[in-house]
Amino acid sequence: MCGIVGYIGDLQAKSIVLKGLKQLEYRGYDSAGIALMQEDTLQHTIFKDIGRVSHLASLVDSVSDARLGIGHTRWATHGPVTQANAHPHQSRNGRFLVVHNGVIENYKQLIKDYLNDEVLKSQTDSEVIVNLIALFAKTNPVPIAILKTLNLLEGSYALLILDQDNPTVLYGAKHKSPLLLGKCPKGHILASDMLAMCEEATHFYAIPDQTLLTLSEQHVDLSNLEGESLTLTYEHLEMDALQCDLGNHPHYMLKEIYEQPTVIRRIVEKYYEESLLSDEFIQKIKAAERLYILAAGTSLNAGYIGKVLIERLANIPVEVHIASEFAYHPPLLVKKPVFIMISQSGETADLRACLINIKKLGFPIFTITNVKTSTLAREADDFLEIFAGPEIAVASTKAYTAQIAVLAILSEALGHHYDMRSKLAQVAQSMDYFLSQASHVQNLVKMLLTKRNAFYIGRGLDYFVCLEAALKLKEISYIQTEGFAAGELKHGTIALIEKDTPVIAIISSLSIAANTESNLQEVKARGAKALVIATDDLNLSDVDIVLNHVDALLTPMVTVLPAQMIAYYAAHMLGYDIDKPRNLAKSVTVE
Ligand code: M6R
Image 1: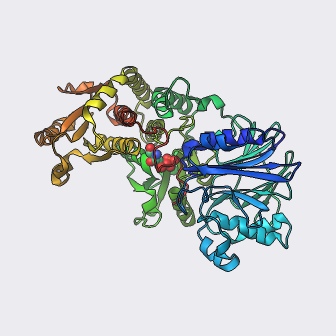
Image 2: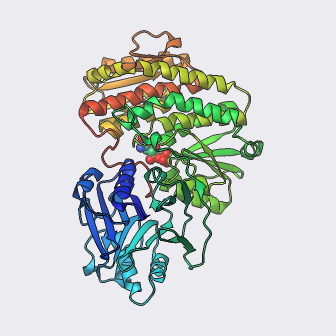
Image 3: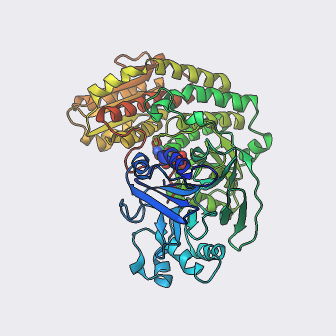
């Protein structure tokens, strides 16, 4: 959701910024822009348009040798998808240029108080920022003008600012929206995430909130919003550009689906060989009267599985809440709660809103995340990493199974020995087996799905997998899909079943197999086209996708794989942009 990249140094800014924007495409966007500053002529050039970064690249002059540039991918919030609303935005006097990720909540008031609204060329909240800077710069040095502006802003921002009168400086500022500083052998990069800098930078710094940065090729000055200097401590950047490479796969989603067995093995190795769960950490959680899992989307669906794992293995009650609901409608809490935030990106704004509230109450929070430098990892008391490697496709796949694996290891550590290590190894094997012959799912998809609608049904853990399966199918194929508790269908929703409605049943446990099968008969009797995904230990007849069985509590890690493939092939069949589905962003940094 909006990505920003800026570079200052001795290399060609154009190629570094465009490459960075390309790497940020996965975050989701609808328009893109770049501004390049020519040091010798004090001239800047702006290119921006709706559409892809490849289109933007085709607009940028091939000759630009500028050493300073800023770029942006916009995911529309304020104002529709138009060229005028795309970033960079320029001040009315032409002196300053800004790219912005975040939301300025009081922008209308700021226009009223400080700016004549006739001057604004876009409908964005961001354009206010650049005009405020220009206004204050009339009577103040630029850093003071920026600080004055930042102190007026309510909401969230990661900002890059160019001053045409000073082409040797790049300004950056951060509050609540992600922004990292990268140190390169020849210059500095500011970007929304590491992927945009992993080819150039050797070290990074996770910029704290309420910080202003003043960068030149050699130097970085940091200050807080009162103008007091801050110290900078770099960390080594471990990410390898190859991790983001598509390899032989046509899409990131497929690549990431196929990476799952490797990710599970990596998690097992990390957690068991390196003893990542300290006694102190486990004791802190064990002291809880109740655990509260907060998450959104796929991470929420992993949270439901986590609840079952923790309650069964550790005997601690767990509630699972949708983050955006919890933030404003929290339930009655027990006296000694511990909060678990699950977030692949670690940047989800709905979760951050929860985190701020919970911190005020003084309760312990830890995050389960794929990005150890993320806001939620840094701001929680502790975090557990899922080691899935960069997840680029908007549709989350490997993060889901990795989150469940970490929750399973945690559950064992909180409870009793369960031989989780070898049970997870068996999961990886079962995943390998399915993936080795998964291409036949393509034919099943062609026979079963139409554009209209679909249902996933299941009971118990299978029901929670149905929620994730339905989310996957709808978000990339745009087929309206519901994940349903099989037994609940007959209480209303069965009215939607008609001739050829696709219904996919997930069955992984003997105790519920007969019931789910009879629910399937009920829908078939009303004309539904059925497809059954089941594990081999059940010995059911009429199964379309048979999976090697695994431990009863870990079945979601295996039964979700066919659902991921069904979604992938459905989007493929319908000709959609699989890795970048419409309207969606990878990390959702607005509430
Ligand atoms: O980064 P997070 O795990 O916090 O993201 C939460 C959701 O936005 C995310 O899981 C979303 O639902 C996925 N696109 C689903 O595939």
